[in-house]
Length: 390
Image 1 (cartoon, one colour):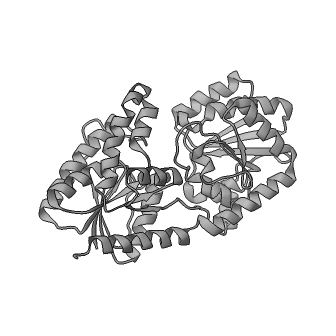
Image 2 (cartoon, one colour):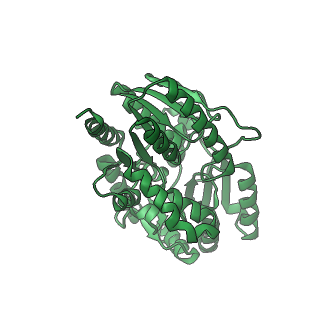
Image 3 (cartoon, one colour):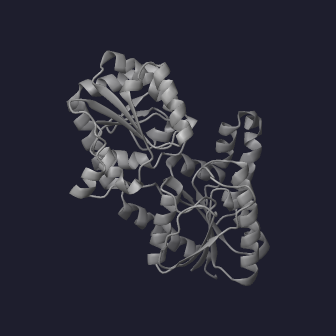
């Protein structure tokens, strides 16, 4: 099929959504589909066989576009809408594959030009919007009507997690819906040269608790630091290693660590390349995901589970739709509960090993690239059947 992919985000960047898009494009191109991919003006230029990349023109004063709803994204989406409209007037496509809010553009073009579309449901836009701007919460049901229409009018939906699959089915149970989770990003081998290059210089005979990711508020870094301050006082041979974050966020959390009296116990490394993720996870003893908001499972969770290290995470749907008590230490999103979880894992090496082994086995069975490819290919074969002339 000839497919127009509308991807309303910077591409390529070493983070969840662009990484997932890259995997999707690689799989579809190998299957012989001809892909035209429209992305934001920011990101690294990469080449994927069978893919033509088109960058929308940068709107005035728009730069450093971050994940989540923003006026910058709206500005880029308007330009994407105009550019896609011009393209579709001159070129015929069999299908539009639309991610995130671009589904509303796809729905418009579908009705106007009779082009079917697939909704790549990476998040619930109404939930995301109302979480970020609480004053909009009374309008949640109103926004959900638009989301429901996007699902109902689509040829099919790719949902990135159980929560979104369930939500899509609640909108239209007869629709073609496939859950397509993210996968581990870890490679099987770490070259010795890379292992040496990525050494963080961590102390021996110390338990290192590691967080990897951005430092946005929903990630729960405040909760993590507050929890660590309680456990650190009890067992000072622990260190908290935080990988990732913008300079301003790192500065903010360094101040917080100092105020909590744990500045000597927290190491901020700044961002590291995703391709070196296994090198950094290998240096940890415990991996932590302290999220306090959201429903989507963080992409890093699959790599955490594949690392051979135990995972500590908040007992929220964002985690529990993948993790359970056999594969992770799940705790309530409260500082005392998380501190107790940290302390228990620090003291119990046998439990650490058991959770790590169970999690790695789960990834091998369910969350690997082969499983991702099989689900995506199967879904697209059914899409082709749906849109084939009767």
